[in-house]
Every structure is written in structure tokens, then in C-alpha cells.
Length: 121
Image (cartoon, rainbow, N blue to C red; front, top):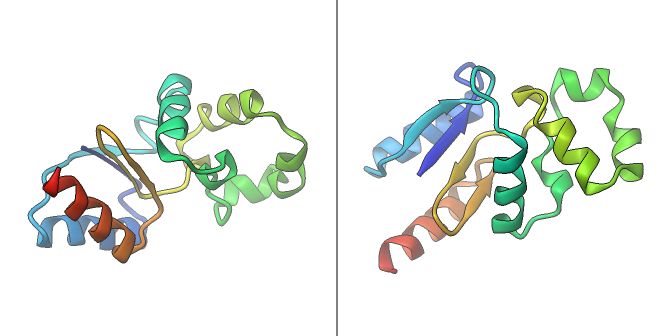
């Protein structure tokens, strides 16, 4: 699994601590230093089953300074993916990417449910 995070983000720190406390192996990737590519984002979006707008870090300074709240509703998926691929700070974090799932944002109950189901399979 790949754990994408921004090390200074407190939610990311909580998620990482949760992974470690639950002895879940992962590969750490700094979302700012090694941001997701267009192809990765497109694949993760398909795998997640989520609307693409859920992949945006709506509380981030970059999102706000670019006025994306107003722009996203008029953008197509292709344009959104291209935009997300330009800067990791636009991408919602933390993100946990497994072989058959993608978890966007940290909600402990959802992560526990997915990872316990993943262990059973």
C-alpha cells in the first residue's frame, strides 16, 4: 500500500500513527515532494468509486487562492485530473492506495473497515 501524506499535516500524522498502531505495512510518499501523476490519479479515481471532486484538498490555501470552489463545477474530468497532477497540495490527504481500493482523507472507521476486509480477502 502507498500512504500519501504531507508530513506537516496533523490529520496525516494521526493517520500514520493509526497505521503504525495497527501494524499495517505501507510505503510512505510525501504528496508535496512526489505528487501524484495524471495516470496515477486517473487510475485511483476509477478504483475509488468517488466523485473526482473528492480528490481536491478544499481546505488548502492553493485551492482557495485559485478560486477552485467556483471553477470546479464547470470543469470536465480531464481538466480536473490535469490540474490535480500539477501540484500535490491540491490533492486531498492523507490517501491510502491499495491494490483494489483507495481511501481519500482519514476517517478511522472507514480505514478500519476497509483494511479489516482487505486482510480477510
